[in-house]
Length: 476
Image (cartoon, rainbow, N blue to C red; front, top):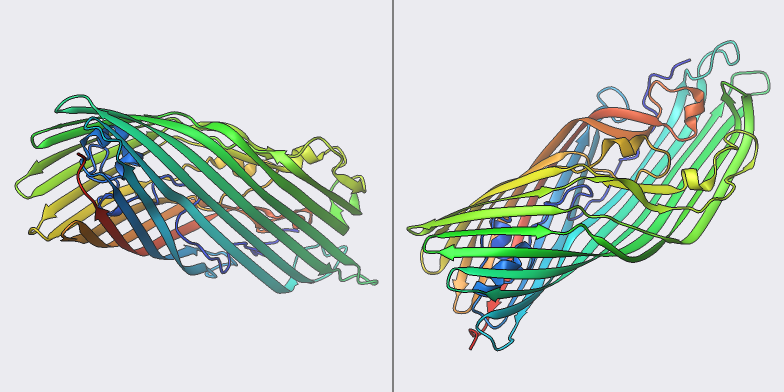
């Protein structure tokens, strides 16, 4: 008998802050660079160029420049028919993310420049829970006439964060050209937990109970390294830049994976009703996180009191791989169902990415000596590899929608400091969003962990950017 009602959905009542978990361009760094949407590959007059294009370091003439910008954002997500027809998933959240802290070193050279920055490209938190209590037609009437009493609870939490430390060096070759190199050290951490509990009573003489429990837990950290080389050209009203970023090199990392599955009186087509349980927990497992090769280019033109800039970045694909995987061990402890599956088959988090191309158009106008206006528009494509959702193991990625960002703001200049205030509007949707853990058109055996569901997801966000920049003396 088919069950035509969506029983569980893990995305209820989440908290999200800062950034999506499958996007490269959700955050932009630095005050002016953030208002420009990152359209600064051709050149940025502050230390954000350490990240965007180290080739531009040679054109910076300030001894030290420190930036601290914060993004305050309200995010809303809606997923249609999450708990049945016209029963949508809706969530709202508020978060604050520091998006750049950095400066320049005085190396007492007119040609060589050294800068540093600390950024937070990802700060993603999700907490979801759902409960259902009612009568549903799930078991064939020949065994259990009428609707069965079903109680179910589902919980899903995920905390993903990344912090990147960048150290860049640049050299001005002549009046028009400068080159540079930035070392990027990234620390990534994830803590993830999923729980699905189902209790059902059959309408037979002994009122047979049917119970399933499905638990997953993962926690890991990873450190990786990548190098970015850049070249910058500036002449008269024109500027251009080009960067290449290497695929990441795994440095170190470890983590824990555990899972527990219990079934009681569950009907499986090949065996009838069965009991059984499976459990394993493994610690100090090695981790490996991969970032793709990227190439970015930009151009800008200054006219009158305005500047028009364009940047684009291509991110290569990453073939599916194991971020963390349990070692070979027995997983099923009692019962014959799935006895051929080991921990290495089910205790695994896979990674991978499809190639994406992001682009941004930015505009700047000097209204007067104290006030500058900026406006930018950019796309932010999801790199989620859809095939990973269908694989066995842990499915930790949540966001799948492409996002479009519109940013506008002003900067007030005072002596050797400035303050920026901006507004960020973001919108995205996916008509084929894939979610796991539902029981829509499912067999009874699917009560163990649910099935995959295709639905529509919508994402909106409003953010406030507040930044401060402090400029000190020029290089001597």
